[in-house]
Image 1: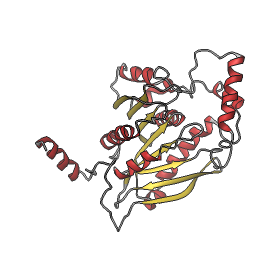
Image 2: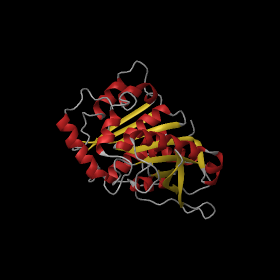
Image 3: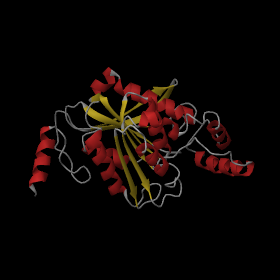
Image 4: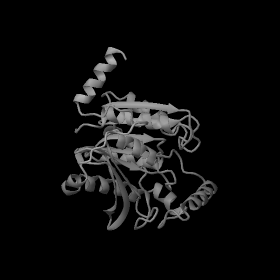
Length: 299
């Protein structure tokens, strides 16, 4: 092993950062403070959000990532939760209102409100103490619509210190309104996705919602907030759901061209589809490496 590598490992060990590879190696077992799974719920808008938390081993407190699923949420990315836990992070996963058995009605506005509510409750002193959370090291990690939510809620919420957006969608900022035929066809597709998974919404109501707050739902309207936080953007070169030109490329270019430097911006394109089906190990490595470097210490 080269001397520089030995010095790096030594520095990480002194800083208390796990030095094992979280993709392939389990951390040492701490019988006094073991890794554990919490099953419970959070509250948003008076409704229960079904949730789980993967709690890292060790006395902590630990940096904590809130993992946000897409629409409707078939891919939960829980392999990333396990990798991040092995890297020393707690990971909180929940279902939005009206999604997969959580109470209330689904809407895009509720998704953002739910993220803010969970951030607040994870940072609550009592919850944080019980679950070994470092309240000043909270990250959002989101995929697809969850990436959209991570970007906007992360830009809006000062308590969020770090953001990772994976194949992120941009629900706002449409250049022109689609014609009636396109809207009807899109609503029909959304209705098919909703069935058995999402309640309190329809394809037509969701499309109508996009026109009500176009600026807030436009990721490109949140550059000021995004530029202040470490940000990871990962996309797939074969993504036909959210192509590179939809958000990944314009967002990266806009942040790089700002007169004030971005806190930390990393962008990666993997040879993968929208769900990164053929590159799960590579995806986990990108996320874990970025978060170890930029998201593990209190702000």
